[in-house]
Length: 328
Image (cartoon, rainbow, N blue to C red; front, side, top):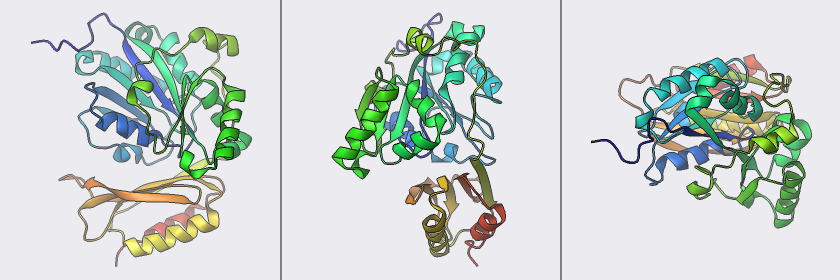
């Protein structure tokens, strides 16, 4: 018997683009979407900036299909991959109710949105529902000063999740919101901690307004050129032996204290010695967090990997430091 909630054959599938600068809380929001009981299923496309992907491991285990695209900005080299993935999903459109695309924190969302208007095959089968931008209330002022990507992500947002409000004072929060409104006075803003916004406020909003975007950027549908912060780079490392947690904590603590201003984002999946659980480590500048996210799956190689995104990265130094964290 057919599922009465499945989209009809001729119905366009809603697509939500989830964006936000490095460490704002996109994956936290995505995990909430995938774990809360809302009765809907989503296909998820994750794009990472770096040689080794860890975001796919940071997404909680769920029944949803997760597709990962590494080592490129989703708005540049992998747009063709995005079109192919969406085309493949359309062959199984009765299996899900919508598509969520989580972009790398360094992506300009405009070319991503363009894909759903300039590619005829994608345009016929999908509709861009909303661009949802997650914002780090503590670090946004600095990012607006040094990153045009952060500005673009806010400018194109239909919904803004103003996250980590517990890390700033009420006065700082008002100033952050004022700066957001100076860039985008149309988007709905939700103030949150740990991205705790009602799911129905970010999905199935029907909020993307092409006419507003064209008024802001008349060449939106034809402009394929955009800039990147060339001084921001990514380095990834992987080791086979288990990690000694005491060695890792001592090393990463010293590294973040010394180089935290240059480290925009640090994230890793670690295999601790004598522990069957995966440990997820994440940091934004000097603010770090970590927790176990479930057991290693049978047959999966228990390799630890870590990704650094930032400026003035020293590859040999970072590699030696991570390798020295391995258990004896």
